[in-house]
Amino acid sequence: QRKETPHHLILLVKNNEGYKNLIKLVTSSYLEGFYYKPRIDKEILREHSSGLIALSACLKGEIPQCILQKNIKKAKEVTLDFLDIFGEDNFYLELQKNGIPEQEIVNENLIEISQELSIPLVATNDIHYINKEDARAHEILLCIQTATNLSDPKRLKFSTDAFYFNSPEEMNENFSKVPQVLENTIRIAEKCNLEIDFRHAQLPEFKVPPEHNINTYLKELCYKGLNKRYSEITKKLEERLEYELSVIKKMEFEPYF
Image 1 (cartoon, rainbow, N blue to C red):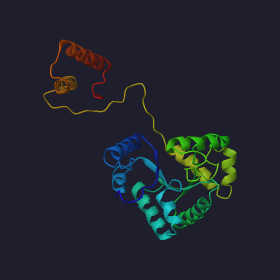
Image 2: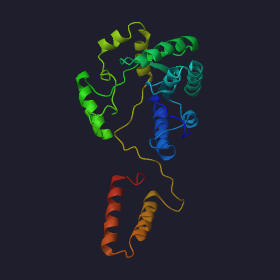
Image 3: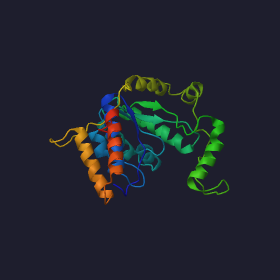
Image 4: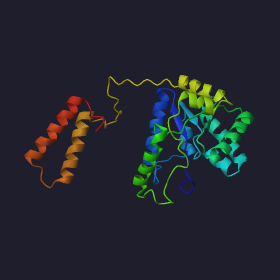
């Protein structure tokens, strides 16, 4: 899997189950799939797809890449694969307007694939800065990020200044020929109904050995760590550890640590 070029995919949370699955996917991408960047494969995606809505992403998405490689058959196969993973009404083909010629090629083919396979389309806006006039500042920031300068013709840069937050009027104008793609943004928003209770700390449930409770187990682990790091456990070290443990216990953060 690491030899394959990674692709982008947009995941949106519908409900609490989807939120938990998204957390699992992100965790897996860092702990198991990290290779220069965090990533996951479709097998893991399939295991944790419930409660999520997926969009086919920008030009870096797998389906757009197949289209740009003139492999429409493969693009359709990937589309059906994602449909199978996420289920009907949970996968959308993504149209964008950014002034890039390749994007227009992708849009035309996505519309055809949508009609042939009955996969809904949605309009999105690939945003990298808020206002159109911020394009220059964004270009400078890319130079800083990649340790290059504006005089370098090979520097990383965007080919247009259209990656800003479009107004509703601009979105309506951009997609006037396919108004249903804007209506689908509302349908997707109505499906996303996650409510997180911020009144209480959302701590992990940590399983401890049967002879311990969460407090005694944390204390045992801390003392093991203390003995590992110091050849002599002084009274000052012990008092400091006991103080830190008391603060953690008072805040009820034991599962986190």
